[in-house]
Amino acid sequence: MDEDRLSVTFAALADPTRRAILARLSEGEATVKELSAPFAMSGPAISKHLRVLEQAGLISRGREAQWRPCRLEPGPLRDVAAFAERYRRFWDESYARLDAYLQFVQDDIEEPRDE
Amino acid sequence: MDEDRLSVTFAALADPTRRAILARLSEGEATVKELSAPFAMSGPAISKHLRVLEQAGLISRGREAQWRPCRLEPGPLRDVAAFAERYRRFWDESYARLDAYLQFVQDDIEEPRDE
Image (tube, rainbow over all chains, first blue to last red):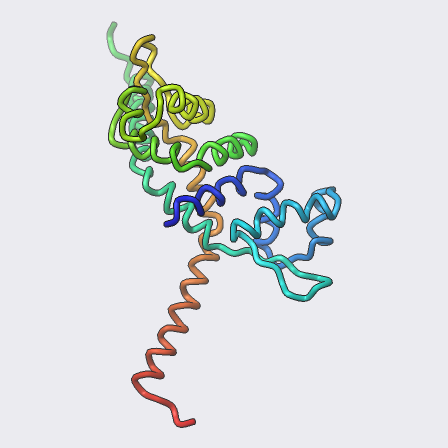
């Protein structure tokens, strides 16, 4: 995995509008015009976000000059998942400790110990 | 999941040194001094990265004024995994299509069709 590529991907994802565009494209291809409407943003503002997503390889755009429909490209998201998965044992451990604590509290409520 | 929190997390992860610090901390707690050595960076440079990671909730720091060991906090990484997982069906599909294509090519090599 190219480290710089991952930085570009994370930087592209560090914006709620860009993540919302990806969520919209997960339902199917869309043109800039179709993407502008739900976000209440101008075409140029959306286009700027699309350029960032395209440079990060998170979307691709059709070749037809006028429409250029946008399409989700999942490769970088797979790399993001792989990155986070390396740390899974840590959050699994956190949950295991929380579970154990909640079970302890529950037992204590059901069977109060003598103080 | 707080959308702005996720933006802060992604921005913190968009740097190879900060990701390397997290990888180091996945092996155990470390002081700023211990973190500075392998990265060939000054204490202040590392401290700046640590502040970004701490503000994103990706690490926590001990209370002892002098040492303040850094510790990995996995919560935001779990949110990153959850975000990426929403797109899993797309990369699974990409792989399925690639698999199908490679199988087709393989079959063609083993049993050339008459042209």
